[in-house]
Image (cartoon, rainbow, N blue to C red; front, side):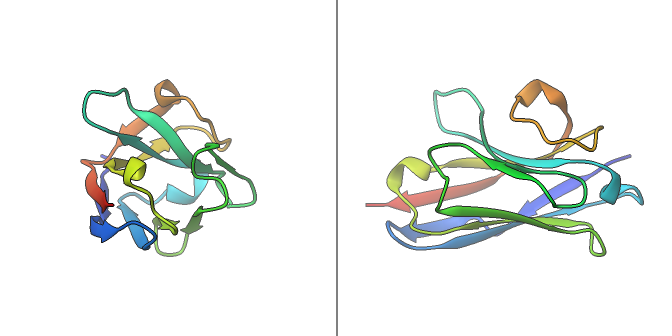
Length: 124
């Protein structure tokens, strides 16, 4: 059973920073790509960032490129999302997700396991 638990969300002013963390259960965490997605009210879930199994390859949506950084610590079974220069349009529930593949993907449907989400609210 794979469990993903996000933490670190909250309320922040525009221009501020937050660091999201995702703790994964299971002994094979290091074998799979991980991703972060977000969903704002009334909108579809969208890709934010992804990282390959060893962390050597990352990818970001255009809307967060240069502001967000994804990283992983395979020894601790965690993946993080450092979010800087936050904007009100970053407000959403953020989800951690795991593929059953070493390669990263930007597609929601390519991820097999999801966390419960953590709320990020950016005030103007």
